[in-house]
Structures are given as structure tokens and as C-alpha cells.
Image (tube, rainbow, N blue to C red):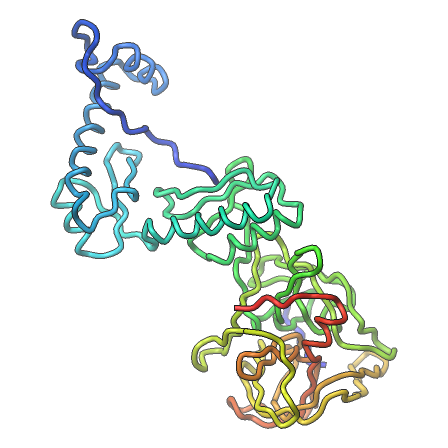
Length: 393
């Protein structure tokens, strides 16, 4: 078997709300043009004098006027916010916009995401929530201070919560998730099939993402990777837990299994190729005929290719320290694989074919077309057996 042994919100930043000046309705006061009661209330909340509060309002009003003068330029005013020092800061994504902001007397900050991009992410999350309301997700919106869509979560225990958070995680650095106390919730984020996943002192490779009949996100993997229903980790962060499998040492087995995927984690619908060209979008799970070209992605041997030789193939596995095990229903190939590749995806064209089960111990993988003898668990069989819908690009 090709497993491996390892040595091993809406939370908006605190800050002043832009204040618009109003004609004085009362005799002159230290607040000047502002209502005295408003200035005094602001001063009380900030712990400053009325005069200091009035100056703060004046400063904000002046800077807002400068921002309005940029509305006909390439600068998006929706990306503006007052920083802790009281300066109006504008998020920009190119040097030209930064020069315009600074020429107007405001502060420019180079940001990773445009306001338009974040608005689109927020709209997509709105659409997800409208399809099925996530009761454990308290709120979400664009925060210009963090330059992200910030999602605030209460518990995230329902299927709708998990689906929403998986959608949020699919946007990577554009989204951050916080709990009810405002603390960031660790997320493995979006994980590409073929990446390494660790459990105990062993590791396998990430397979395909799918949904069960209730819409819950699951990982389709090799059964021997989840034989004891382990916790699974990606880059040191928990992202899934084994839930079921048909592999058992010393018995007649089928090498398929599932793991539940954590809220806030998404399995990408593109297979990683380990720097051998662009990632491959997964469009379906149509079985390729014998003789078809096929490639697999794995944490040890990377991206290797060959052809399919047979289906419904039976293998006797002899795993050191374990009794011999008969595994049936496999695909046979001359693709090269190594220990640690188990569970990783196989793909022909844009159709997912299976996950790595095992291979011969004398395989010598040397580049993309290194030859060997390997076995994979057909994907269509696993989807059908467990009643799953494959996540596709």
C-alpha cells in the first residue's frame, strides 16, 4: 500500500465613523459647526475634551472632501477607512492609483484585493446563504481595514453552516473567519488533491471532494488511509476526520473510504500537478477505457503518467507488520507510484478516475513518465457505493 511513514466577521475594526457637518442650530460653542450634544457625547465615548472631539470631526470632514475629489479617477472610495491615527487611508492595487491618492493629500495602502473583487465574494456568499440559510453564521461583509470579507461564526454545526464556510474558504486570502469573540478561526483553507495529509506517524495524499446526500462535504480517499478513522492534517492544521472505510487488514477488502471535511476547509476542484503545468480542472468522473492515458498526483512521487491496463483487478497486499490482505475491484496501471501517494487523485483528460491504492515495492519513479506497476480505487465505484456527488470545476 502506498501510504507513507513520517518522522513524524462581520467584525469591523474600531474607528471613528465619518461625520458630516451640519449647520449650527444653537449659539456658537467649542464644537463650532456641530451640535454641542453630539460633540459632547463623542468626547465622552472617546475620553477626550469637547474641543478635541470637534477637531477630530473637522479632520474627518476635510479628508472626506479630499476623497470626494477622487471619485472621477481610478480610485475606488469604497476601499477607504480611517486608521488608528485618524488618517483617511485608501486601498489601491496599482502604483498609478497610489500616486493619485497621495497627490490629493491622503494615505494610500497597497492591497491585495480590489473592492470589486471583495464585493463579488460577498455577493457569492449571499447567494449561498439564500439557497440554504446557515444558522450558525452570524454575519459577513467587506472590511476595508483587513482587505477581506470577514465572516463571524457562532458554531457552524449544521450542514448548511459547513457548506457556507466551505464556500467562504474557497476564496482563500479574500476571506477570514472569526468566532463570536472576534478571534480568527484556524482554517486549512482550500486544499488541492494530491497534497500531503498526515495522520499519526503516517501520511497519505488528498483525494477528491464530494457531497453526500445531506450536502455534507467529504473527502474520497483510499480505505487504508482511514482504516482506524484517524484525524487528518494538512500543513499542521486539522482539516478532516476519517468516518468510514471498506479496508481491513487480514480480510477481503475494498480500498475505498471517506473522511468528513472540517467547516472552513474546501477540497479544490482542480488537481495539483506538482509544477508540471497548470492544475487540472475536474469536470466529472466518467470512467476511461482500458488503454487510456492517465496521470496521478501524489505527495511522494508527484505527478506521474501512464496508461490504464485493466479494471476489476485483485491484489494481495503484504504490508510489513500486518497480515496479508486481499483487495478487489482495483484498476491496474503502469503509472509509477510510491509510499505516501495513497489516496491521491487519478485523472484522464478532465475526468477523475480514482485514488491511489498501492503499487509494487520495486517501482522506481523518475520524472513524469517513470514506469511502474500501480493500483487505484476507481472513483466512479466509490461515488456510487457511498451515494456521493463529485465536486466539479
